Image (cartoon, rainbow, N blue to C red; front, side, top):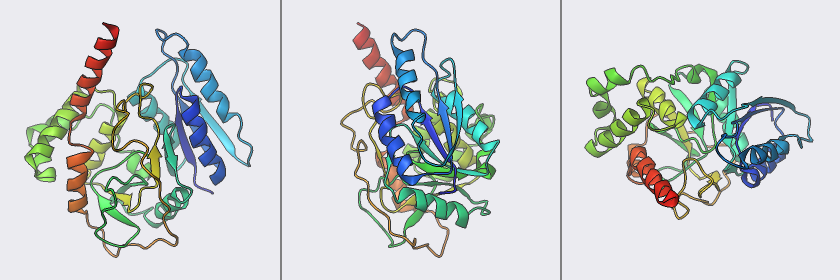
Length: 303
């Protein structure tokens, strides 16, 4: 496989090894590894980070390995975004996997095919193997178009990532002019995302993904989502930064194969019916509310 693969890791050796094995089977010619550093106040975390990083040294195929390892903990938002900035300073496109996102083998050619097909289409911002439609399909094509840029196994181009703005400098104008209402229409969705973006802008939520979603929306970007779920998130639990609910319906979703050659839709139109379901399930509770719930859980443990 010629497309570079980016691997985001931290301290979860077991999950990292599972995803690493999937990457190993795909044998990319270039592997970019981004690792956050340990937190000084967490006993044993430095050892966990070292154990996780050691997995990368087991690359045994013809591959250039590039490492960007932080000595100290930068946090999810800064580590991922700075790491991807580093990647896209060197390459024009890449497939991106986090340490808990296990792809089906067909995920890699799916991304590679569509990266090539839409390389110069400025409308398309990302490609994702994550599907949360639970079997619902409006067409028999291999993928559909969405306003949501899912990040559990995805790919993008330097031309799109250049719009990523950590400081979200356009947020105040977007909020003041109520542009989210024009985009989302549904008042509940507008409220959810207004709260989410405000909390991210205020640095109360440590999320690069919210900033990426905001960047996509400010440019009216369209995203490609597979019509079958190609990636399973195995990271739900206490060791996770953002997915602490073990019983979530989105945890450990089955992976499916997608057939090749891909069946391409003859149009580029957002599937609003699919997006409404996604909004009402995956995004039904704002990330701010989830963060508050996580904080309350932490305080109870400390008490």
